[in-house]
Image 1 (cartoon, rainbow, N blue to C red):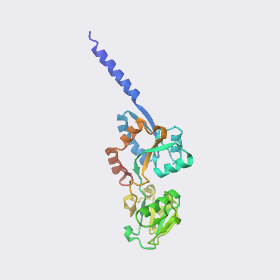
Image 2: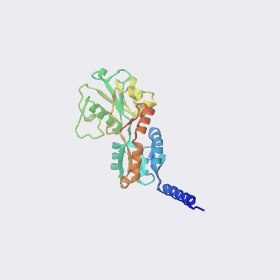
Image 3: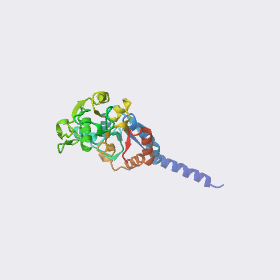
Image 4: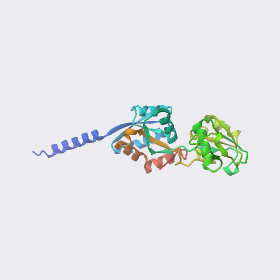
Length: 260
């Protein structure tokens, strides 16, 4: 009686156990919506590399970094680099970004003018009244050559940092959630993508828009001690693929843009 069939079966069992042992499960924190949807699409590719992703959704922007720093999750994907830098400075988190993902480009919209060239001198422009978003709007205007800001303003300039304003624009500050409603009363308004979508505004209709590879592109963050771990490389490789890029472009129709 040949032992070959039994030996083959044993070999297969050992191989299966080895594969199971090699598989690694990681918890990745995300915000609900696009970040969660994208990561769901990443899971199969990661699985093929022996990496099981457990998605953990957080409803605010503070807890995901605290949870990561505390070791409750292994990575997160919900924030841009300036926000992460600010959290690290304020809360002393030992975190680092390891890859860029997608951008939710800030846009300046108008219901009165079809292009920025039509916006007249002395126009009223609404921006957000918080430092991060309002500063982002001013940086967009600066990057498009519309205003000039003081040197060294970083990511949080305010209207008082404007040193040149050739069109004599009147900048007014509003709560970020109110900027879509202001369109009837102003010449143009800076509106975050999520608020634009909620208000039924097509993101691609913006008359000015951020570069998708600018400073506000979102990132994958991990604890600093894990940045060179093999699973981090596998996570990045599974995320930044042509297939995921195609999904983002098709699913979000320009409201979310891949950075790769």
